[in-house]
Structure formats: structure tokens, C-alpha cells
Image 1: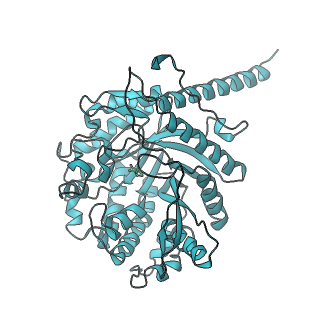
Image 2 (image 1 turned 90 degrees about the horizontal axis):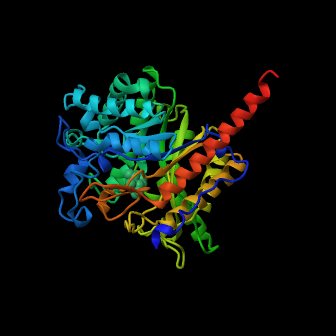
Image 3 (image 1 turned 45 degrees about the horizontal axis):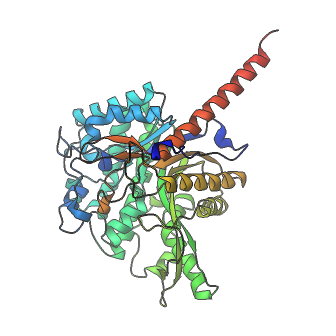
Length: 469
Ligand code: IFM
């Protein structure tokens, strides 16, 4: 019987700083993927509402109008997060819920996030808040969106108002989540909202996104924020031949997937390889932009999921060649834990000014079902274990990593994939909105409980040692 099988266990490398309670374990969500209530209490449409209305844009024509109904169920969801024992929660504020079209704050939006932050703090959970997780208000898109330099200034206004009204309870701020996806998927390939397709659009959008980050940093700091950073998705890159053209393709792919975001932040310029990848596209840099973009941050958030195995495309670019006979997730992404170690060690070497790192997303989608009240997601447990091992290796090699956030707390609206991909630690039944922690959630819960007991035992022992005889 399924319910007699033991929950698979997770462990941490012996002696690893991850055992220390200062190392944060968290889980993440984003507003658009979980909240629903897209037209309630003054929330205005965002680009994903518009995009989802395009025939064929989203699998099965799904919409995020209800999603996980988190707008109503936030209290139970946060209590569940606490029951699972997490130290931190990564969420985003919906720009179009928090601000009105005229730029003033929407009191109902502030009240919603106010309650969430209070409840997190009541449980002792540290809130990591992302300002922009892809949900640009539609009225800004109507004025050009990220192709309009003014949008960068509007992000800074959002940062200012959000931190002025809610910043006293935010542990860490993230300006942007995965600008690569906003720029390339949203403006290069057209697969994501707003659905534009062209290299020049992508390059322009990226510059304005990063400029928005650079403008938002001082706005957040002016309101007392002490932990401010950005979150970027990165890809491990390999080639399975030694042909010079394929090795060059590796460099181009690294420039495109990783350095396009990281070089401006930590070197103050875009990678030269971009000019050979997209000769006709130039970022619209104005004087002072790169200094703003490269201003020091308190941490960098790294989202790691998979590797790309590339080859030369025979012209001036690279093509994703894929690999046969590797383990994949339901999303089709290769499971390649060593890539997490390799990218982190690579970044620490390339950027001597790299700040402390949080792994802000790592996880996988699988075909999960509730059977007799249990979700056996054994592949996810193994996935987490192997990525924690790889992270331990990076830390041992000297990379300063301070936290690990699983993606995602619960199954949710997976953008163009609708509800077909389940990334959650917690299973969501979209008909009933019932939540069932999967085996992976229970394994993390047990690990975090063990960590607390060990640290309690240590603190107790050192207190006893200090106690007068
Ligand atoms: O669900 C997304 C998330 O919004 C951003 N990073 C990747 C996840 C999985 O695709």
C-alpha cells in the first residue's frame, strides 16, 4: 500500500554551512502565478492578462484569473509554509495591484501585502520581495513597455512607493526576476508577454530592464532597504565535440544566456560576443546608464534549472543541440545538478565583485497525482538532493552562498504552459483548491526540523558550557 512506504529523506553534506540556521531555506511563488483575482479591488490588467487572451498563446487556453486563489487563501498558504519549516518566503508584489494607473498607491493592494508580510513575520519567516516578476501593467505596455526608456523610471517609482509603504517588514528586495526571460522570451522570440519578436527589441528591452534595476536600487535604499539585489536565470552550457566552431558556440551561448545580464551588473558593460550574435542590435546606452546598472548590490539571486548542450549554427551563432539519453523533467529540461556547481564556481571566478549568492529558484515539474492522500514525487526528492549536494560542492570550493529557495511552494500557473506543469512542493487541485504537501515537501520539512534540533542542541550545549558550576 502506498501509505506504508516511508517518505524519502533529504540530507545535507556533513559539516556544510547549510546546517547552520543562518543559511536560509525558502520556497518561492510569484503574484501572477498564484494570486488570481485579476480584476478585484482595483487591480488593473497586466501584459500577461492581455497575452493570455491571444488564441494559442497559452496551453489549453488557460488563464490566471483564479490560479491558486491565493488572494483569498493567503493565510492558509503562509501557515502551510510555516508548518513546512521554511526560514524565508520569496513572493512578488503585483505592480498593477499595488499602484493605480496614475501612479498613486491602491490602498487595497497595500492592505493585501501588508497582511501577508505581517503573517510571515508572525511565523518568523523572512520575506524576500520581488518587484517585477514579468507582470508589467498593461497601461505601461500601451506606452511602449520595456521599449520605452520611461518604463525604467516607472519601475523606480514602484520601488519607491512599495518600499515606503511596506519596506519596514521586507527582509530582502529583488528589483527584477529573470530579466533574460522578459527581454528574450518576451521581446526576442515572442513566446512570452508582450509577445514581440526581434533581436533588436530584445536588446533594447534588456537595457531598459537593467536600467530600471539600476534606478530602483537607490530608491529602495533611500527608504531603508538593506538587502537589495536582482535575480537572474542562468544556464549551464556544454558542447559534446571539441570542434573549434562548437567551442566558440559555447562562448556565444554563455554570453547570451548568462553574461548578457551578469556582465553589465558586475563589469559595467555588455559582453562583446553580443555584437557578433546580433550584429544589427545595439543597446540604447546613454551616459551614466552603465554606472547605475553596475552599482553594488547586497546579493545576487541565481535561478538554476538545466543545461544547454550547444553547437555552432554554421553561421555566427549557436544552436541548442540537446543530448540523448539524459534524465529530463516533464518540461523537457535536462536534470543536470553538476551545472549548478559549475556555473557558481564560474561566476565567482569571472566576477571578483560577486556579492553573496542566494539560489532563488531551483526545482522541477513532474506529473504529480494525489493517491490515497499522498503525492509520491520521488524524482523531485532526488532532484533536490542532488542539487543540494552540488551546492555543497560550490560552497566548499569557496562560493559564498547564503540561501536556497525551492521553486515553487505550490503548483501554479506556469506561464505559456498554463496548469500543465506542476513545479510545486505542494500539490494544488485546481477544481477544489485543496493543497496536499508532496513527499518532497515532507522531506524538506523533516530536514529542516532536524537542522533546528541540531542547532538547538548545539546552542543548548554551548549555554550549558557557559553556565556557572
Ligand atoms: O515558473 C517560473 C518562474 O516564474 C520563473 N522561473 C522559472 C519558473 C519555471 O519555469
